Length: 502
Image (cartoon, rainbow, N blue to C red; front, side, top):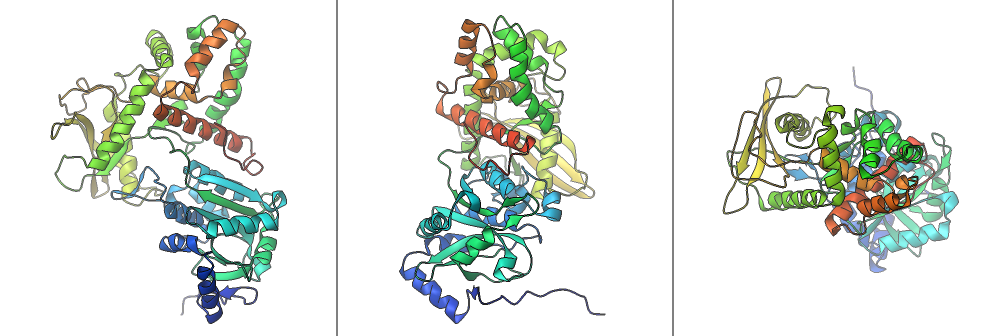
């Protein structure tokens, strides 16, 4: 019996014009001559087909991020850093997107999380003339791209909500080129801008909001290099609420007399699972041969992480945090002050996760087990020593060798294996992580402190204005992430589309 299935769809024309038709080619050549196809070349270089029927938003965004050459800062497969749909899961789980698709507001948040500069508009907050201006602007350059969220039914196409990038514009005919990421269904096609606007003006029944469009360009500043907030665990909602809502109320209600009192109020009441919320980003790589050498790029990235860590540890706030944890570590559950944290255990977890990603099974339920870790300090060609944790990860009959490069602020050339870390320098520990997190809290967090002199002192400690540039960018990145997560927590992600405040 023959297998049932669909092989593409006939593109309804009008209103659309097939890109590969004689008329479509004519429109393309005329638009090139007018200079309104400049964005096309980069987009077509990274044009992809969505890998799931409901992944149109993720495919459109990963395509645009790659076209803008934004570095995701983490590996996709093998040694390659590359945006893929499977990596865009910080605002909505992939399983949810797979079954329900993704809303306009959450895709905007994903673009923010990925480090892009985003301007987003629903049609009730814009107009067709403004949309035309933006399409013209991005089509006349290669440094910004438009993603449209529209209702297919207005174009007489099957289906409802859909995302795709706009790949060019024909000014005289007032037509936009849709690079449809559902290439299994419809080819790229030209549509009248007025009809596309009407299609974007329909209500998305899942949110009750109008659809719209977003302009995505390269960021003015790079996203964080060492620290990141994670919402992959369900506990993030409680931790985010504590940091953004509860801490200001606690500080307002408590009689705090000095810095240690202030920090004690915040740290001693932290949810027990806060360490799932903020992570330090380790550099991982597949060990493909026996060489122990690091590439120039790996050394450069590790150097940046180490510099961020050094700058954290040189802040006045770090000294107060370390002092508090040293005094009260017996009361602070899992909070420790540095060396006591078991680097091999941390590395085993990271190596397992890395092996899963490098094998292309990031969403798989298969069990990965790191059977062995070995901490080494490498020193080659006169460079300073670098701490590397080598992990042997098994999954059934498969074995993967993964290295984790550890940023650390102090080291010597000693080496040690089999789990001992007595001779290696400090990796990012609880005092470093907590310092970065406290610096990232909004300034208004501390405004409830009643003692004026103490309030001034805490403002001086947490001020970002005096931080070195690298650490300042790191802290502002975390602060923007906090604001995004607060939007998610309060279900405001569909109403507030702007860039998170720094």
